[in-house]
Length: 317
Image (cartoon, rainbow, N blue to C red):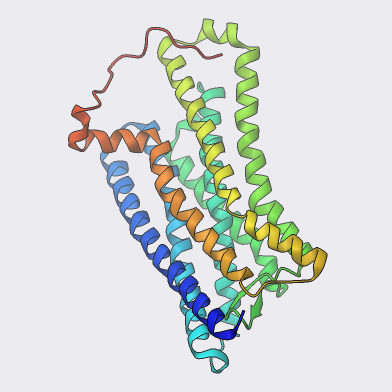
């Protein structure tokens, strides 16, 4: 590919990433405003906790899009002005550190929702797990952990400046670091989320008769709903990870052949941004508390009348 075509392609991708990220910021701010309003207004503890955990994920999405725009503003300048522009500074590496930390927090915020649903089903008698204040503390701990686990990459200078892309990131050639943080950021939350669902499913199946004796009809309805949400969270996490497949393929090609396409970093971040844009939309649809609040606060509630009683027959096996 000649330099002119490469130049135009880079600009198209840069503007696309910035444009999509701007859209993501607008969606995230809108959802956070909606969630914050209903957290303050709503008095039902379970709904407030569910909104809080969803809001935590939208907050991570908002930070992700902001940092992407910040990063790609420099990348765009570099692609326009060429070699006379440089971003090879300590701040560049710190920016990459924050971006990686936010991606880590995004995956773990989804896992927190799965753990909450798991506790709502398995430990439904434990009032401790229904505390709004405790979940605020858990969210703070989650962010602290994410900052801590990513910090070695910053202090050990694993974030490197890419002169062709004008920003810092962990290069594809750093095999050990990429594998390590791939496990920390993606594999661990995926394992926990799917583990919560499988464990809950098996426990309910094995103790189905005992459950029927000790729980009420309304509790069965709640358990069925929580199981559905837990399953959707697994699907959402799997969906998020599928958009990281292009990066994985490029990484494997680089490891086995030593070849790294000039567009590898561009495609990587474009796929990330597209993934997160989809998440901002899908998350609202798979979260029944948000969907119900939206229906109840608009004219659509006439089309979807609210049931005041649980269904007469509910299967939990």
